[in-house]
Image (cartoon, rainbow, N blue to C red):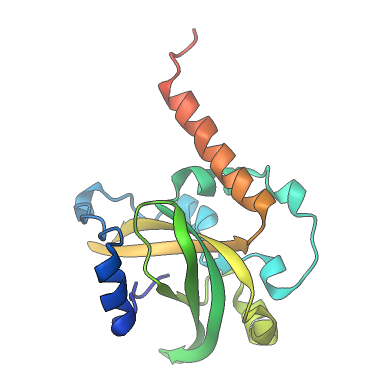
Amino acid sequence: MISAIRPVLAPLCLLLAACGPPAPPKEVPIDQLPPYSAEEQAVFDDSLAPEVFGLATDHRAFLVQPNFRARSEQADLVFRAKLVTVRQDLVAGQATYVVVFQRIGAPLVGGYAPSELEVTVGRGSPSLSSLRSMAGKAVGSRTTVLLRRYRKDDERVAHFRAEPDSEQVRKAILDARREARARATSPEED
């Protein structure tokens, strides 16, 4: 879960403000955000793909799986990033990891992304054991981060998935979004 979306507030912000970056989006009313249900947890699961840790997998097969397509279609924000920090925290006696991503370039989807994004990977994440044993391998990895905002207990929360940063992954994300828009605008067939 993203505990905070924190733009860098040092002189970099002044420089960005002078250059006219996109403004943060207006907040969607909480009651218009989707709830973070069990089905949503399977899609935006606060995890990092195995390739982010340097593990080799056949990512081509993964790109056509339903969760990847759903994540690609539903993300509020998609951006390229470098994973710059992983640190362990204890929350209520449970180990969690704080992961910091530094945005690279303009967002692929969504009009605004902070220059740095701090996320918390906790007990329910499929990546927790990988972070315990291989956090050092993930630091410096280039990723494509997909993020969606939700409503949980009348609060705004955001959940994410970090995929490896490759042209193939970015193209699959954008293709899935384009196909979803085409389905949404096509007349229904009987």
